[in-house]
Length: 382
Image 1 (tube, rainbow, N blue to C red):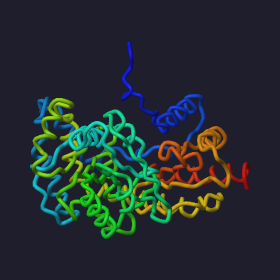
Image 2 (image 1 turned 180 degrees about the vertical axis):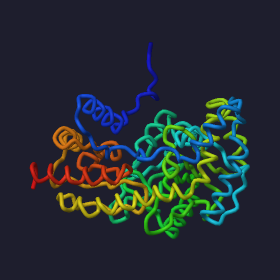
Image 3 (image 1 turned 90 degrees about the vertical axis):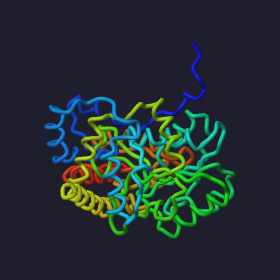
């Protein structure tokens, strides 16, 4: 039986790294995990306590496709709290993680063969989801002097039907300031290109507050999730905000593709939004971890990177030491017991000379991982 060309997508290498780390651990080796964007904390205690009581009395089943009205109302309130915006709950669509939101966004906005710009380096699943829908991902080769973010000229010169930006971004942690984001949105509009803003790392920022695309325009799609700031990766629940006249089309697609997001996850997400104290404590851990890596990586000779504005990643140029990031990461795992991610996941053209560190785990792990990295670099390169 033949397989479709649309299904011929690249592997997500970080998942392969996770599996290699798991095998090393199963053989008795102690591994420090700095490879994946998995918060070291579970869902907020308040949310877990709530759902343990709720599950015994709640008849879990299908919800309406757009999501629980109470959750959509609470997310609307979040936009008021975070951005001083009045976003109607009617424009909010609950999704099966941000991945479900990307599938719905691409299917709603684009036709087969359309060209969609994505930053490189960038989150690899953007490219693969686009390819699976017969869309053309257009890699924008961003520069460190622009903090690895697209600029208006990238829209003007690439004949795009749409552009997706992320701020804070994965793998770089960089953010787009309000002026630059406004210029990108206006340029997209001038080129009749749809604008999608991935805001999954909002809430995890260090010195400046991120700007939502919704502060600039309602004519965009905004995607977010409970995976990162709310520490609910495995619960698979996210959301999107779309223009009012797009809601029904997104709803029809979601009815057929997903029916509805998981009921139990929606209830847990609703409770998690009141766990502000615990969530802010998590942010303090990320701040400490970021500070450790910003100080310790240069001591290991790893000096070429753009300090992250948000998220929990540092993207490092290793071209001085290696032009094979996959082998470099395998060596670090084998010799130092630290799992990190090769840049090949994020940049198909230049990723052979870059790596990504995640500092989402405990501070003790980040300290230990830093020491192991320094010893590895001194033994092999310095």
